[in-house]
Amino acid sequence: MTLAVATVLSFVVVRLLLHRAPRDAATHEAHKRGQQPIPLVGGILAVLALGIVWIVCSFAEPSTPLWPVAILFGVTMATLTGVLDDTRKRSGFGWRAKLALQCVAASSVFFAGDSLGPACPSAFFGFAFLVVVQNAWNLFDNADGAVCWTAIAVLAVAATRNANDPAMWLVLGLLLGFVPINWPSAKAYLGDGGSHALAFVLGYMSLRDASSTSALVSLHALPLLDMVHVVTLRLMLGIAPWRGDKRHLAHRLIRCLPARVAKWTVAPLLASIAALLATLLL
Image 1 (cartoon, helix red, strand yellow):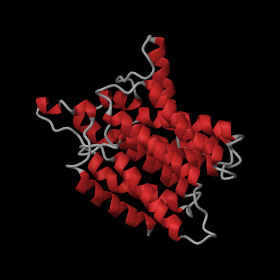
Image 2 (cartoon, one colour; image 1 turned 45 degrees about the vertical axis):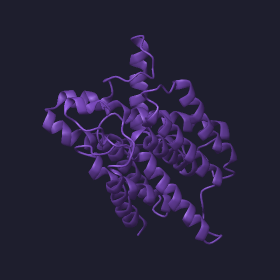
Image 3 (cartoon, helix red, strand yellow; image 1 turned 30 degrees about the vertical axis):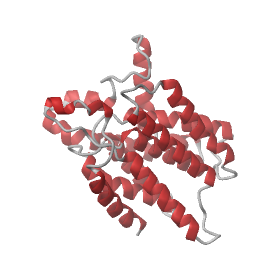
């Protein structure tokens, strides 16, 4: 039920916001090329999800396992970090400010009580893990549908092990409702607001549920590998790690395939690889 409601709600809200959401700074000049700037709705979807969670928390039975308030604050801060990055790209949003806000979001784990699982040896480890996965998923958001398809795939794998988590079904539903508008031809982007919020939620789910180190990284394996690969190459070439380029796995797949084929297959291919890695590591 949660999955169906979240899917429909996400699709309807995104359609309504297509002409009202802020535009991607990188495509603000797209009209000069005969294209339309792409709206960023991920941050708004994250706020919608948080609102649903707060409503559920308000009416839930005391015995219902809920996310700590500190973690909800962390998701909010992660979303804000991404939204600021989305809206201030043209005026400049330095990597130091972005990293500082990511750390503020991740610091919520210090106040998460005993909600962290056995694979998390300490709150400081959880803090570092959340900072890393925020950057990994943010960097992985470099092709239409890549993040959505990959997140859907790994959540589907995780659902086979933990089908009773309503938050998991909520996030999965929001992504399923969004992906038809994001892929194969993007009418809207998650943006940094969406990728940061999604990364934080998936990161906390891993810290809470994982019973081993391999399970801890299972949902994030492909974005982490892609980040390590790209950052290593940039450092070897003397390029700043935070400067964008076309060296990601998605870009390599796009170059290997005809344009029409790549448009339909790259995101599902990435999702398949991510699902395989998650299955092997869980």
